[in-house]
Image (tube, rainbow, N blue to C red; front, side, top):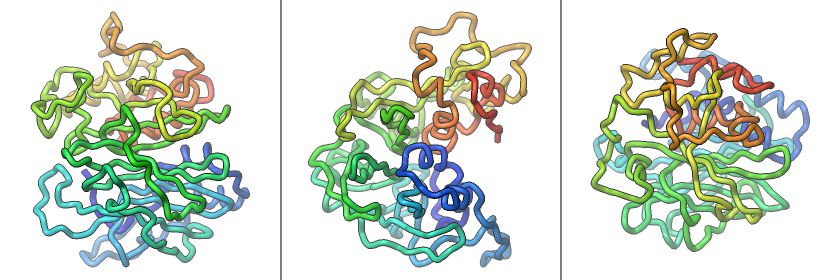
Length: 344
């Protein structure tokens, strides 16, 4: 679940988002890109006597869920913005009164940070009621796009999009959420041919489990499917239409291929006790937990899809935003050019 640390781990946030940001953003100079990839680390001491990995970016406001981008050689961080609601932690995020977005900007990692004004507030989103959680941003043809999750008037999460002519906003929201969208944590990936894809999904408070049957079912519960012996729920991906405001296709499961070309979700079970089984070896496990017959619900994508060709983007999405905490280390051999991920 989210921890509001005032971005006490900005290096993690920046590096996690970098595969998306550097692939999709407007061209930036080499120095700025290097700064994103090689942040300056410090070792300050927190109030509890423990050490931060690096200095918090800001302390004036509470922020989480950073998504970093480079636009015109400048670094922009799109976090969620928390306000203390005075509600006890319930593991569903009810205590996070996130009502608006504030964009952070800096010329370089370690440099002064500017906190922008309100880029978008829930009152400016006609369909939304509350819980504007982790956002992401993209740029195309002179327009900046802010993608954000929020609960509608019925308490159901959807993903909205807002547009602006400046990276820090203000942004104007579309009157309705993206048709066919659901759950939380949007992340945009722009392929080499200019096609854009939206990755999203999170269980528990993010409600992904409530869409397991293909439609919203509140009776499923607030945590997960309670099927620890079944494959984990996969995050979703959908190609965006050229206008960047709608889906060009129905959202589908993100499929990460193992060395045998079988989907790795078969090896990642919902139960935490079995997440690591057969998924930590640098080579394919001798006793593979992948079933002999690939279930039809996990279609194997062709090598030309972004999931197969650009595994760095897909892995980053799944590890940092929308997927399980464990990704098999041997999936790095799935496609040429893949970088082998680390397990945690």
